[in-house]
Amino acid sequence: MSKRAVFIGRWSPFHKGHLSMMMPKIKEGKPLLILVRDTHYDIYPAALRKRMIEAAMAKLKVDAKVLIVDDIESVNYGRGVGYEVNEIKVSDDVKQISATEIRNRITAGDNTWRDMMAPGADNVLKNYLSKKGVVVWLTGLSGAGKTTIANAVHEMMKKKGIRTERLDGDILREHVTKNLGFSKEDRLENLRRASFIAKLLARNGVVVLASFITPYETIRKEIRQDIENQAHFLEVFVNASLDECKKRDVKGLYKQAEAGVIKNFTGISDPFEKPADFELEINTEKLSIEESAQKLVDEIYTLVNNI
View 1: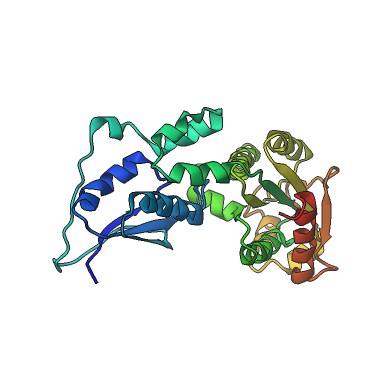
View 2: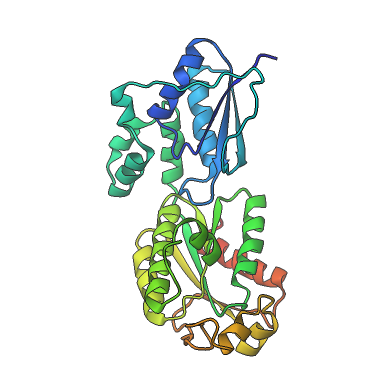
């Protein structure tokens, strides 16, 4: 088998600038190995980015193998083992093309984003964008079961080939909101950023499972209003008593909050306002994880008319 020229990137989305980096090797007739980083913070899932690249390669009749790989922290090598390491020069006009600009134009409803896309990839993304998504917002106390249910639903959706992404506090704070603390103001800002990301994902046809305590009715209403005109919105109250949540607390967060080590902790030193306007309640003291997940999946199917 011929050796392949390797290209690694997010490709979010795959545009003419990305393609231009590959053209020197394509013109040499070299087969390509294109690796798509499976990042969890991009609005376009890795599987979609893979399809865009495959469509572009097929249109150009390029021998290219496209694989999804885990997110990459760094690219490392020791001594030379026969690989070329090349910096690809591209023209100034191509340098002006950016995935950020494409996403901004899509958000603004400016269809000229297609002019910057790689041929073939534009149709894949256009079809993807035409499908309205869903934001499932799971609210409830820490330990109520929000993330556990979201993870189970995510796996069930994946098996059915439905585009699904998870958002929760740990994911968001690791990648997007590292600069925020845990004061009331910072927690509200964290939720607003989560709402923005969820809206972008859903507007691109994704079912978003957002698991956040979201303790105040005012912020829940704000999130609903922000998302509802862009996507289907489903607020889910994951209900478990404070005593039950304390029993499940393997990290000892409630004990630390009661001891004053953790400040502004919902349910202890900060209130949780029971939702007044929700589509579904799941009582995790009465239902198993499997039953809870199935109940939510059934509700999502009903909402979007059996996606």
